[in-house]
Amino acid sequence: MQKPATTEVPIDQLISNRWSPRAFNSEFVIDKKSILSLFEAARWAPSCYGDQPWKFILFQKEDITPWVSALNCLSVGNQNWAMDASILIVVCANKLFAHNNEPNRWSQYDTGASAENICLQALSLGFAAHQMGGFDEIKIRNLSNIPEQFDILSVIAVGKPLDEGVFSQEQKDRELLPRKRKLLNDIYSNNKW
Image (cartoon, rainbow, N blue to C red; front, side):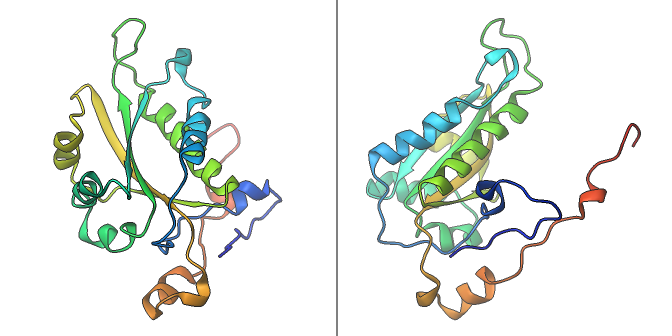
């Protein structure tokens, strides 16, 4: 299902077509080459000093025991739809620079850019990605042995979008809602706040 943004001025189609569905084809399995493509896109995001503070933890649906453990770290509302995705990616940011071990105040910003590259690459491959903040950080940290030096920022569900012809009524009600954004003039100003 496509749900392009209604923009005030033209933007690249890849960006306008990116949205966060919650209806995935539960039978689809992402192949290894595509998974590597997602992480390659992440690798080439910009970062302060080229530090690349991001680290991703991958959970694949076909590896059922870790998959269920990862799903159980999500909020119940997210579990209900994320279980149909093909993979889950835990997004982490190193709080310290690698070159000097000093605090990196841009690590979350840079990691966010890297995560967005994953979402855009997913779309370019015919997949969909949905980033989530509804998860239990302690459970995920313990499950994946994530060091305290890393902030856990989000979990990304990636999979094949479900054909809208087979949506349940709940999926129709949720997925077909119009997309909303602030007006362009509300998000920037010239020279002063």
